Image: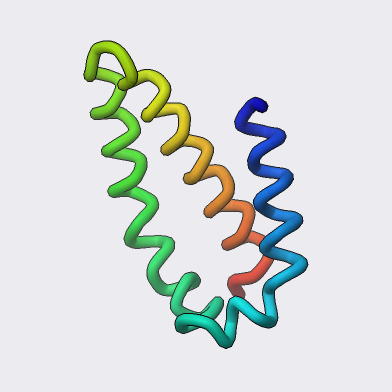
Length: 79
């Protein structure tokens, strides 16, 4: 499974469970305020992970995928 496929699966789950997610732990409003602050940190960690030999490239790719999914969620749900 590549990053694009994983991103699509996660977005389908988010869309399917958006109302239950809003009731579970703070909801979309919290995401919309937290994401702009969390994204640069995740981006930094993804770049840093690339410097780690071995699994660093994989960890960096996973973090980049997480950033991509977060951007999609923000684009679709945040004002």
